[in-house]
Length: 344
Image: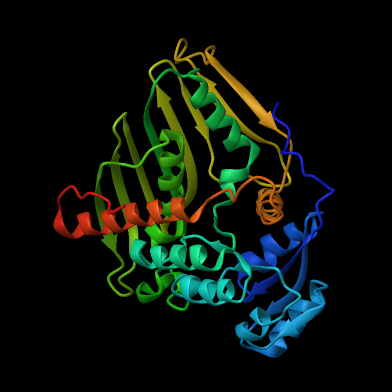
């Protein structure tokens, strides 16, 4: 059993500010940060000052601001968590960086790879830490999956196959606005893409995508992709209008691994490794369980440590640009009906 990564409690906690009152911030990230010895949420901002004050009172956050800029201008804040709608990720992350704030920005990092490169230039210019918030990349179960793949236990990695779906058809939801970067590929298709690139340790040479769009809102509601790597392939499907389900299967020449993208912080998570020797009876499979951990807490810990000079940002901006380049190529392929090369 793999224990959760050890946190260095000698590191001074990082003082965080939260841009906006997005659901993921209020229900997952802020409570998780409160469980971290390395993070202190000291301020939150909303364009509605009454809402900011209400949330600050409810979540015991010391300061509330009625604009994002006011929070960024607070000299006491060291780092910003940006869970704003996708089209606001890069503009507000750049503003924060230019004020000397480190930035943990929600996925997807940008609307396209070119926009992500602008953010990368801002990071290099300002010298702050900026990372993409793919919390799955810090969870012990996924670190173990990576360890198993790299060890050669399942042989040579040949195929990563994933699926991620849920049903939500609300025209008022920010994920239903195509001009704001809504749709399935940007919202959840980015997970199987980042996992496959990470496990292969490489970028795909070319991709092909198939997109079905909502006839009214025009966001992609069902998207499938095929990624060709030098050593294998990755396939995935994602949807915002299918029954909720998520899974990943990793296939090697001598075994496979089954895992889920998300993990409930209240219950054990598990992965299954199968050598294929007993397909019907399951005798060739081995299940590894992991104690309940909050992957958002771990994500905050790793980022805070990087700010303090310990380790590195879990998902770098270079990695984020690569993920966006694949997403761009999949959208281009859906239009051209041809294989497309990601523009790294």
